[in-house]
Image 1: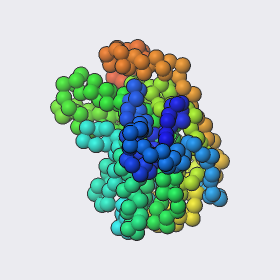
Image 2: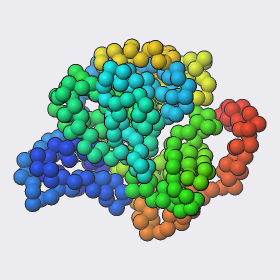
Image 3: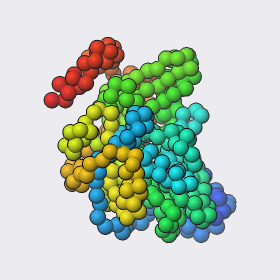
Image 4: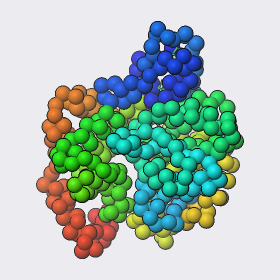
Length: 394
Ligand SMILES: Cc1cc2nc3c(=O)[nH]c(=O)nc-3n(C[C@H](O)[C@H](O)[C@H](O)COP(=O)(O)OP(=O)(O)OC[C@H]3O[C@@H](n4cnc5c(N)ncnc54)[C@H](O)[C@@H]3O)c2cc1C
Ligand code: SF4
Ligand code: SF4
Ligand code: SF4
């Protein structure tokens, strides 16, 4: 029976929850707000299926051969603007949906909690588009996928590497009608902290939240701006340096413990396709460097290559050298982040002190940062933001 003694040994993929024949595993939040399996020992028959399925309890075996890399942009500018990087995910998903397939990925529920869901129409695809930097609740995704695969439906599953490994382990065998797509993954922040953060925003603004984008491109791709919209019509745009939730993510304060000892940090993967941000697009194509976002796509299997060939009418692309592409932007494909020494105290404080105080303690906004925040819309309106960004990055 699954017992989590060390929290770094559970990525929360939910494979054990899905496999249990007695349905006696529940995914419950811990004090930090991350989901972990909890077993009802009264119902457990000690069959061992949960231990056997856990991808963190076995060595990672990768059966794929060569990996190739492409810098990709979706030709549809509005899709690209709504996507975290170049909108490559939407191009892959479109091909699958056009064939009558079903696409699974991370989305927001009505309260902006992050969970996995499926779409079967192009119109619904927008709900899966764009990264949400919060751990996604998998719910019954794995069992739904298994039933659909058995019915012969074409499935595209998109998720973090640990979710893809969890799904593969749960399914036990390969399915010709399953395509898996994972991400280069820095880590996943706490869903519990996210909930508190949204509640704080909503209370401060005295208005319910109606829109969230972790990667809004209002001020271009390079700023990595987060946008939060309210029912009262206000939209707050904040770049990573002045945005508490993203700042604490990049300071390695709010990610899941397993992310600091991630078992899935490799270039070659069992996923058919891997996506990540191609910040250095200039190194691969000068023409594609337009500050609207580019996805680096890694193809690991023939299935991935075939799907990529079918997306060609929807994308602009340029072949890239894998080693260079990893070195420039994909370092998180192979390296784990190191937990911030304040991480434990941070989560303790998140329980004990009001959110306003938590923000002040861990995220003091310097005068310089505040000035940049105030000046940004003015600079943007004057049309000199991009020149300034280039000047600062030199
Ligand atoms: C938690 C997380 C961490 C990441 N870390 C890095 C990183 O360190 N470096 C890097 O270069 N890129 C990272 N990425 C990937 C990057 O943000 C883009 O998602 C990627 O470049 C694809 O962009 P796109 O424009 O092609 O597709 P998009 O339309 O942006 O598609 C995003 C895809 O991610 C899925 N997704 C969204 N949120 C989640 C979630 N919470 N859990 C699982 N799946 C989700 C969606 O279903 C969709 O398939 C991360 C993404 C996530 C979700
Ligand atoms: S040992 Fe079997 S019955 Fe018990 S929790 Fe694990 S899968 Fe469920
Ligand atoms: S990593 Fe996945 S399978 Fe393993 S214990 Fe955690 S949720 Fe269960
Ligand atoms: S860093 Fe590793 S363990 Fe953490 S979410 Fe990403 S793939 Fe999963």
